[in-house]
Image 1 (tube, rainbow, N blue to C red):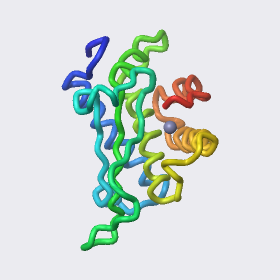
Image 2 (cartoon, protein in one colour):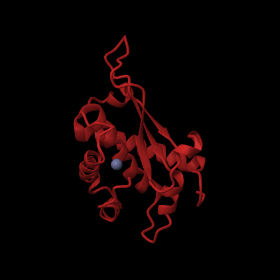
Image 3 (cartoon, rainbow, N blue to C red):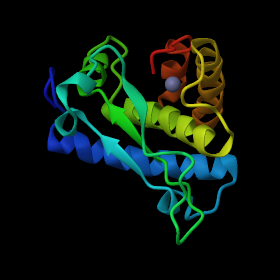
Length: 170
Ligand SMILES: [Zn+2]
């Protein structure tokens, strides 16, 4: 793990594993079909993969979207909108240095669960990606509440959940 800047390849494997677990926990929480993520893939992006203007070292991650919500692909009725999670490497790496000593696995699972809950809510709960600041702030609280429910009891997670209780930057 490097302290500043980019995830190493090893960091990326940890983050990918955390994403698999987050996907599974979310399927269970929302009672979704087991192939839901397969049918609605999302991209998991890190600094290495995005243009500098998308990099923001002040937040852990963001949900991003590509494509139009209205357009459906002709063969299927799958929504053509693609979502992605953009992880902000340095913000996450920096947080690992705090005295609470979270590890990348725990913090990664927390951040990814939060972002993937956002995606499910955009896809299935008619939450507007382009909603007003006010709506999006409310949505942050809802997403955090769900994330907390999903992750409470997971090892080392409770401290983190409390620490970021009011963390609207995720
Ligand atoms: Zn959020």
